[in-house]
Image (cartoon, rainbow, N blue to C red; front, side, top):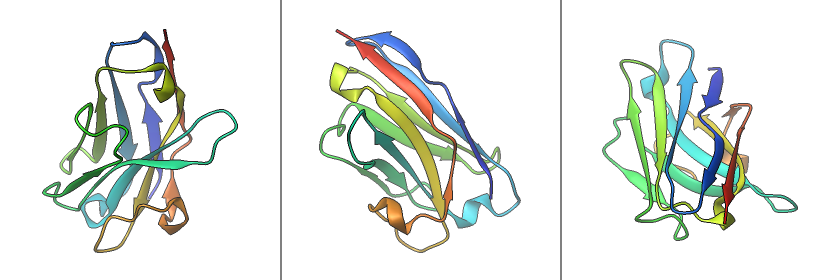
Length: 123
């Protein structure tokens, strides 16, 4: 599967952005999906994950209650709605896919990655 992420940009603190990740292929619904981010000088970290059906979602503590992950299997797209953004959310955001039964939290567990989209939150 090939992934293409978009939707990043520059936003003021407290604002919102919606990231999208479009996937190629006819087996999108067979993959769990994750969003990760990597800030300057930091390791890539888990942000959110979603199961095949979208029925189960998982979030990092730092974004719980502010970010929402969702997917549309008919359109082969996964979204990350980000609200109440903070300067510490500034990072390159990546979507990832893995053909497994449970959503992994470690980036090493994912087989496919999008190219990343920059999110910058100004104070």
